Length: 180
Image 1 (cartoon, rainbow, N blue to C red):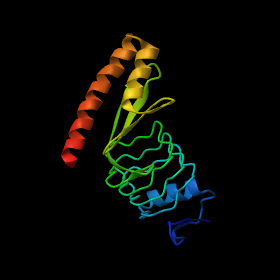
Image 2 (tube, one colour; image 1 turned 30 degrees about the vertical axis):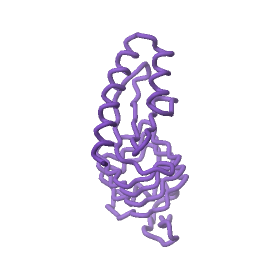
Image 3 (cartoon, rainbow, N blue to C red; image 1 turned 120 degrees about the vertical axis):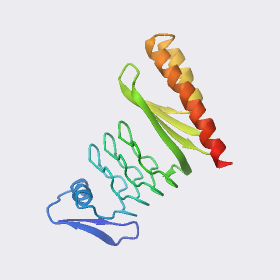
Image 4 (tube, rainbow, N blue to C red; image 1 turned 30 degrees about the horizontal axis):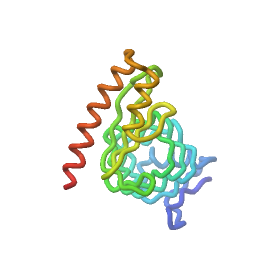
């Protein structure tokens, strides 16, 4: 048996068959359990299916969510600080009020597959900054653009990335304009 506790230490779900936290979370999602405020920090949740799960306020700080399916999940007010979201499916997920580091996430976009690795370019937008992840790169849009120019010069991958960068600049401008 494995218990999932919330950030206050209270048990919010019990799985009779799970041997790990990952298994218990998968069971809870299948059972459509309310995992709001679940303490999932540092958990290995890679490749798990959380499609349409209710994870509002959950603590994913330091969790491995690589390749996880979080499509349509409610991640409002979730803590995603230091979470590994590489190759995660975050399409149509609700990030309203979610935290990434010490900042409120205002929008999330993914473009791909793109580039020489055929990976996804992810954009985490904040009021005054952004975080771009692509393969092993993580940084600002300006640094990503410089890295693309230095790595790919003007090859096909550079052209694809530059088109995506142009679109991202427009999306960031419009998202920030809506906040005013």
